[in-house]
Image 1 (cartoon, rainbow over the protein chains, first blue to last red):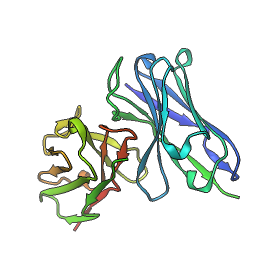
Image 2 (cartoon, rainbow over the protein chains, first blue to last red):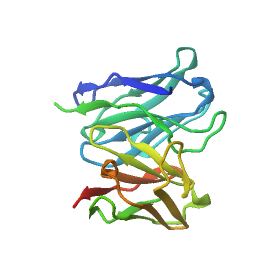
Image 3 (cartoon, rainbow over the protein chains, first blue to last red):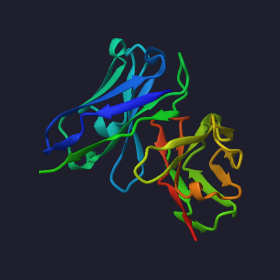
Length: 122
Length: 108
């Protein structure tokens, strides 16, 4: 059974940093492109970033460029999101989500974690 | 970026009725690369439809998707109690991948 479990969320002051983690199990993690998708309270979904299977390519939405870094450790079956210079508008539930194509990319999301809440407030 | 506009914002229907949810794109979605997700309160989204009309694994056949270009529709035949939720469309033809703002299907 595919499982994605996020952790690392919490309350952080504006300008602060946080590192999110996503532990994957039930599939060959190293074969799948992985994503972070966020959802502000009571709002819709926003794709944040993705990373290729071997970590060689990374893409993110314009609003987080230069502040957020996606990474992965295939030996640990884990995905990460390093978030720096956090702003109030980054407040959201952050989901780890899998691309459905083993060895390739389709750019939609077939499995999601339960999410971790990041609150940016003083 | 491609902006997706979903309508209506809220759909009030009774169990057993048919729901038709629309998703309009600000520019043509290449390759009919459009997905639909269902989200219930406090839970993660669940993939329903991909490539505009293909049902994801385990999704009942009362869910169907159609459309191309800039106009897409999710149809739910014979609404079941568990279908009352928020539905999002997502385009993945042009980066950045974007979502609509959602349609809430509520019990009338």
